[in-house]
Amino acid sequence: MSTININTATKEELMGIRDIGEARANLIIKARKIKGTLTLEDLKMIEGVPNTIWDPLIRNGTVEVSPEEETPEKQPTAQGDTSALIEQYKTKLLIAEQDKVHSKREYTKELEDLKVTFEKQLWRKSAEIEECLAELQQTKDNFQREVEKDQLKGKKSKRVEF
Image 1 (cartoon, one colour):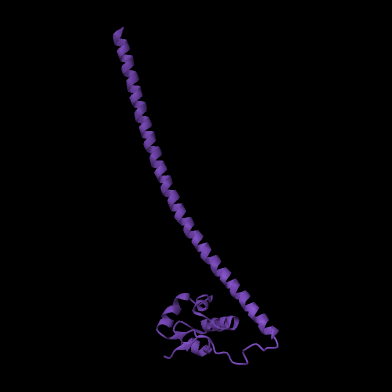
Image 2 (cartoon, rainbow, N blue to C red; image 1 turned 45 degrees about the horizontal axis):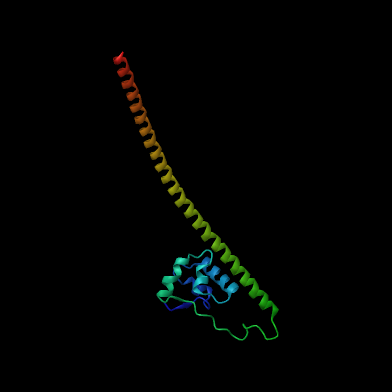
């Protein structure tokens, strides 16, 4: 199999990549239309395509992410193609929104992990405190018995004196 450039590949060529079917090929093409030239990081951010599939494909030469060669008809005109600028801003806005969603997921996962860690630590500390309280209660009970024994000895010795 020859190397497939993600930025120039057709839908059929994308579908020829291991683990890329029609739905994932459509997602890649959609991301390419929105972003323009895709990087490896862009590929890893596409919703619906596992980010773990890309590194092995790049390493073994099945896929590359070289930039698409710009042709004169794809470059904005010098007269100021406002629709192209609007599309670029829409693309950047969409990418920023995707980054925000991705970051929110990461932070939520980190918070959940921290919550679990702190709950475990709290449980361990609670168990330690319960153990200390039980030991203190045992010590108190032992002390109380010793005091009662001493009081009984004191009463017996007073009776003997009379």
